[in-house]
Image 1: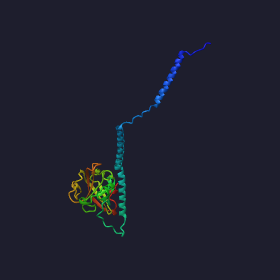
Image 2: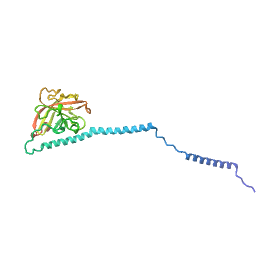
Image 3: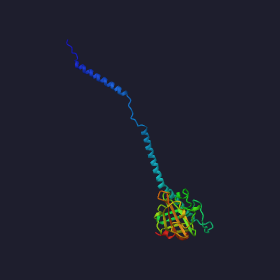
Image 4: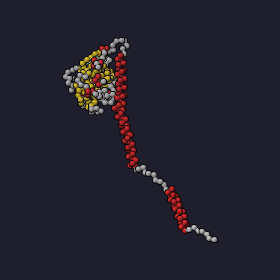
Length: 271
């Protein structure tokens, strides 16, 4: 009987396939057992730089919020307080005396107490005047402060002669005196009190002087051009804008006084 046996080449191919399969299995086993390395996130310097960047971004945001508060929100708060104070003053002035008689004139006020309203029609300014120039009690509340204490004490509008001197912020906190540099000779400035309206006419200005120059507050203020006693007004504020390095001064001379019972002066009623 004749039998058929597999040829040699066929056996070689089968052996090679089995060898290849075994090699692939070994390769997969070796690869599956290896741990994959995670990508490195960086050294200490990289981490520190990232933290510094985040810190600077946070500080920048805080600074922006602070600037917005100073330049915008302090004005909102101060104007709200000042408007309330002006309304309260006028309400008090309208109240009759208990016995129906005219109330005696008041010549002295407590620090921080409002006693008048200042108008600058050209600048659309209407702001309460309080006693003293304290920042927290007066100026930062959007009011104008009267130099009425110690060596800087100045006259009141009702005084028959003297210099009624006041201070106000030029920037932030209501900034009532921001644009007083725009006043020119002849522009009216009006002070209203419980008893009367006092109208002044702007006469001159001093664009810049050191804070130590208190001679601008004298009864006859130096540098104003006035040479004899009279009834004057002095407005003071900081300059340049957003600094307190120097002071800007504006002076005026009283040209009219009328009782409140006669109504507002033409400076407040004329179009």
